[in-house]
Image (cartoon, rainbow, N blue to C red; front, side, top):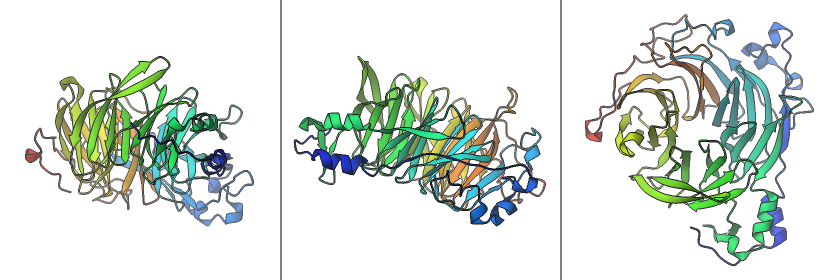
Length: 459
């Protein structure tokens, strides 16, 4: 746990430094008119020619500065729901000149995108629907818990948003974590202060460095926040109270995910993956260190648990994806080798796991019993793939399970992909929307039980 100090800041200093400059804009409804064909958000030519004064993003109700946006769909809109479209093909791109995409979250027909412009954009059915902004650092993480949207920021704060009951395009900020009342209450006792690495003192309930990741417990009653300050914190979703702060690693905590059996997994720049056991104590929680799954020189960048809660995946800066199996008491299951550069993000859905990398590619892996096969390598981004989000395709069937994959990149774009768990090798040509080399042939690489025997995907 933390090394505490009895030196503390003055009350006025706390008010000014922690909350005095927190001027968040609660909402920013997007007012688009689709009455004429030329005003459609799908018409990239129209959007590129829209003058600043007539842009739908320059209304007086919008508090933040706008930049050109374009929605480019390679496949015609009326074909997006056509099940005859070959799987593992790009459906379209959401491109903007506003900032790098750092975070994504999908819920039903809504997609939330966060960037270093401080804006959170809301897309509905692949069209821009709304947006909101916080006057803080870049948006590092987004998670959705029922009607609440939690966003983690570079300034170490977590902001909570909610959709207006009167207007679904209006988002209101309903809180900032930690709550002002909690900070004041804890600032009274000297024992609640910790010494930070910058030789400054801070109340233990707040992060004093950037938020790197947010995650929810299995029942969505607890929120986990990981930070570059080497800790992860536990918050109660119902009242936003900070229940616990755990000094978890020797370097920045890059990933946190709640798994199964009351276990929480954390990954750090110190090269370790740790397991923590959650226990309820009255109205609060207590997390105890359980074991270290991995210890290596390369930094851990991302973690994911498959929906069936049977496998834990870990991405690292050496381009490898390690995994551990629940049924074997978290024994190491193998290594997935498909990237040339660092893994930056992971996502899992059904029997699939997706890995995004600094090499600008996305590998699609399918779990088959105890092995994994690489179905496809998705290419098209012009920058590192920073974040992924997955939603079930509305055209999915039991015979052909399909998913919609969203990928955010430092090339300032979000791409949409239709993925099938029974995906065949893609055709060399696809109605002129893809170049012959846009998708490599389907790979048959399986994960190996031994790193030394693992073969590397060539593409």
